[in-house]
Length: 149
Image (cartoon, rainbow, N blue to C red):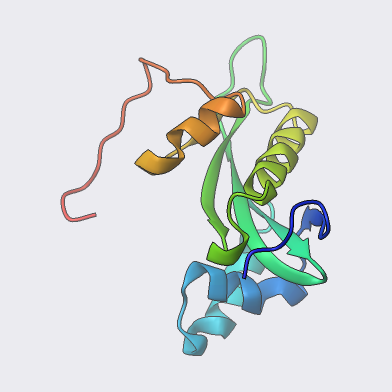
């Protein structure tokens, strides 16, 4: 069921360890992999930052900011960039500004951490969404993909 606009505000926050199960569900992981998933989240806590969107106390969306270190230069040894990953909004909650709130929070985190840039590998239907939120096509960004992936 679609919620009436404005009556159910979204709260965006960094996910906590207690959110592991709902993050696994949003990711489509099988229940038997929950322990390994929670361990992965803990092991990657410095490089993969999960954010969740809550409506009425229920997590209805998630997105991750991957932070990677870049090779130092003379003018900057602390060079890091980001990549938005695994953005998911439950179907009944789409087109209500929840994805926008998640991306806004992720980009604010990127600014706070002084990341040089943030990329996203978007589905075709979401390209315009990211363009509206300050991303742009970049003709120098190239991708190599292993066959079968």
